Image (cartoon, rainbow, N blue to C red; front, side):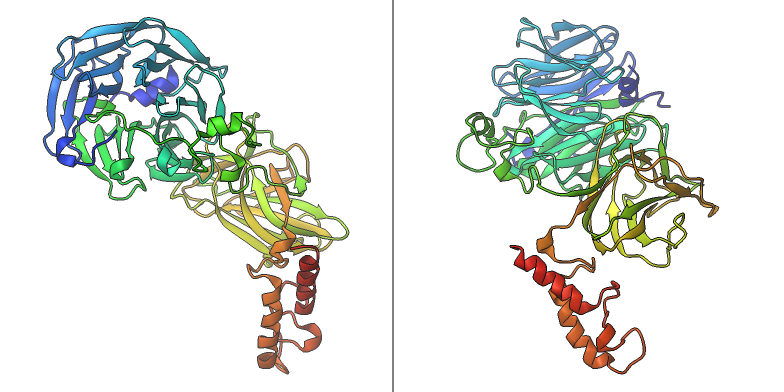
Length: 552
């Protein structure tokens, strides 16, 4: 019977393409009975390489150096210590003692070893000398995640309290690439494809995610998210990009998996037995060599380009020219802010409650053309990943309730991130032109019986209301964290029907011939509103001409 997982405990405290010549080495922990095993990447030939002394029963992380045929790992049973041996367990030595609950081992091109312990990242020389502290987190109660060295580009990647971060090998030049995780546990890289992968392991997340190196395009590759309060199991990750595969371990189910990099073709290739659990992975070919981090292909590393004056307005280590929208120039029509650091918020979904939220807002004289909505909150149980449906309704004329029989615009599949105390704004295109008046943003989970999330409170705005499974509205309360962004006039889709307004006008000509003299909704030429946006189609077309004339 499994009593705990290392993931839960921590929360509380150049690849060869030839499969037949490659082994995956696996550290397995068990009280007083740990061992190191091996298996082929296809799951064949599982075997024990050696058993560890009874006092070294908690190996965490694993590194293999083909040049020396030596394994290096951290043992955190009792006092932590960095250990090394050959593939038969011979020559087992302590490289360096480590203070705190330590994990991981990652080497640079000089053979120096990096690891995390408690809230610090440290480095020692290959012989254990020259210990230095490179980073100390100021986030209390949240240890730093495992570290990953990109020896080609001189970078160290690590997780800190739901953030994916990067720094130089001397601890300088820290960049935050993403801050929407819960507990970023392990990271690996595919620089050539400009992808970063990580394990997120907490009581509200148990998944493998991928982002671009500029922090965009958050994608969940594998998901085993637990129910609220349950320990997570994902613990170690290796990306073998040359063979389009990854390996990852689950120390609750005691399994090691292989899948394609997009998460498909997932299969179990190794099962720990006798109550052992996987806690470290390493390829016999060593750590894959990364490509030069050179997004613009000029043969110069991005770091050097930026140091020489290439713009990086968002300070993420990626030149602006390599990003779709590094620092977008936009007009914010409404910004209610986010009180993400507070513990309060407005529930969304929740099995048995199925909460929805309704946020009113007032459009001033002259109207608004909205192009995008942004929201801040967090996901506790992701469900099947279908996320949130966002709708805009007109007011019911009471000023206190929406008229849900009319939906003016919608955005579907929006997903909150996982961190409960950091701002993690997510957004979606939502095109609609609204004349003066009161309107309502309506948030609902697509799978309210299994999705569990929370909307952060805003600092300003009209009071929001909620409705649960009983259908009863709550009393007005704190506004939600929400932004409304003005539409790009060049899009010229003022009615939010996903067609530029010139097409609406052409639809008018197509439809009028079929609708003339017919009853509503066809109407007559004097009130032709075939798209139902409450604006006659000839005015949609004139809006298009206005936008075009303004320089689109």
